[in-house]
Amino acid sequence: MPETLTVYPIQAPVRDGPFDLIETILDGLAGAELQLQDGDVLAVSSKYAAIAAGRIYKLDDIEASPRARQLAKRFNMSAAVAQLALDEADHVFGGIGLGFLLTARGGIISPNAGLDRSNIPSGQVVLLPEDPFKSAEAVFAALRQRLGRHIGVILTDSWLLPGRYGTGGIALGVAGFKPVKDERGKDDLFGNPMTVTQVGVADSLAACAQVVMGERDQATPLALLRGADVELTLQPYTAADMSIPWQNCIYVESLTLGLLADGAPQRRAGETEGDTER
Image (tube, rainbow, N blue to C red; front, side, top):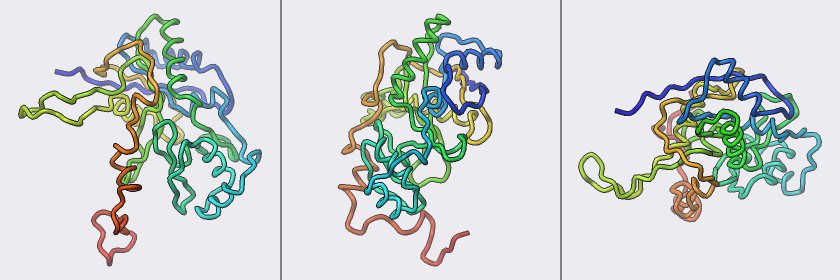
């Protein structure tokens, strides 16, 4: 039988400028009366890590390019936000009139390249960590040196599932354990060989952590997951280890090059032509 997975929320001070992330993590663990054990996985809010690294900008200081102003007008958004999204994104797919661009950054598809305007003083925005995997590796190495424990580290962020209300969690960066478990070639319950299944271990754990970390005013940017069946390793990882090529992505390939002639549906699942908004 697998171990029981336990997730402990860890509170930490609200920050709006650079700070010592490692000392804050250690203080948070002490305050929660938790001691790290080998095999534990520590989830760290990517926003918290980004603030620690000074990835904060004032929107009034951003000079928008003509393209950013054009996108802002088309999609009803701040020109400064549009400019930052253009600067941060590896690719911009498109947008919607609610003020969001759909972007890819580091192999992850997200609105506005992950820019965040919540839980930060008005008029400011927090960008994602410059390299989430290096950030996770730095936390892993520092805690391993200080405490002598081999743990896993995840930098978590909110995530929107295509076609679904609500946010979940996703792993932006990982260190200390294998983030993906390859089940291809193994048999299922009926002896059928698995052909495509790979389990997103890090993303699944990030979703668990997000439940206790919250999205609003919980001031819980850290979580400790104990009992996760992870494969510990000292191998460093990059986005390429967790992100599939776009041509193999069912969403990207189908909705761009593979889009059928009749396009996307105009109604949500379960709606009929006579339905109205509730």
